[in-house]
Image (cartoon, rainbow, N blue to C red; front, side, top):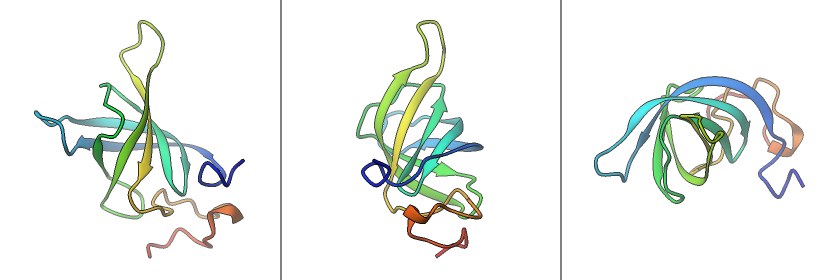
Length: 113
């Protein structure tokens, strides 16, 4: 099961800036990454985004920025002003700074490639 979804998921709290790359007008704002794996993450954001939208994540522990695609967007509760985004990295990797990544991630450290 972990392999099908991109490896073991790890809970975390990483504050980033998410910017849309194909919205007109573009959106940009803080997001909170709460779950990561080698292929992507789940993040809380204050705007809904269309599935397939391109985004940039800035302020990562190991890289200045990465790009990703929205694969899911769910409103958090009927009266919440946040959305839960599923994001798939364009280039999979341990951009999250996980010091001891799980074996199924296929890497041994959080050092940038």
